[in-house]
Image (cartoon, rainbow, N blue to C red; front, side, top):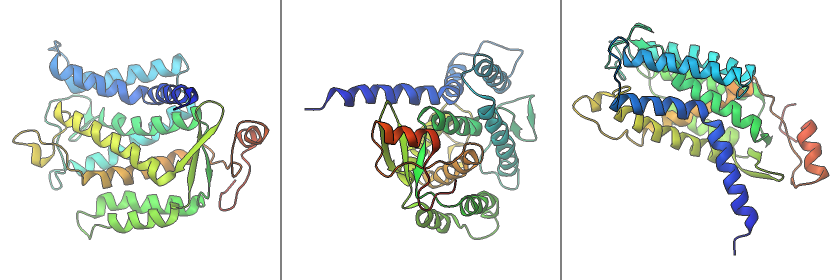
Length: 283
């Protein structure tokens, strides 16, 4: 028989995840609603999405659903994402297009697109805080930052040079295969391999991407004649982007260790307060 604590923690886990997804969920909801009902004739749909994202961001800050640190993460992601979007949507590259008109934008890129990426960053920053993330066997920041720098560069260079994504995924597995992420749902810490956690989040991003392309937010070349599901192969790109997002957030949120076998009580309390150092984990 499944204990009652399982259902309680499962319910609480879902609520915390929903809280973490507030910004991304709102953005996706606006995209869906405006696809099927958008009565404004004086404001382009893309521009409305941009203004709605800015307003919701302000709402989160004013009512303290989001910290200034998490808002900083959103700004960084917006800048990093816009640079990549400008490159990917250039006529000479044409990885995808934004088919609708807009005023708020740069080149071929409407400004709301940066919020799609920063929604991932804000989610990571928020769940990092509310689940009190701790880690064991996390590699040094130098190696993690070096890896994600190569990942970011490969998003550009694979159009002209051999694609290194599978090599980079292999290096990721070698670097993080022993890393476990600990998260506190209620009183006790639960844990899983960090590589698995990244995959689960990347899977949900891929599902959101299918919804976004279905409601005409952006269009891939194979969808120009009609919508088709985004290939599963795209999961590799989202996995690498997930890793990039996570490491960027780790530069703002301190990576902390935990006791080897966390349980509710004094031992886990010490880990929660001070982040006990463990082998292979930088303080």
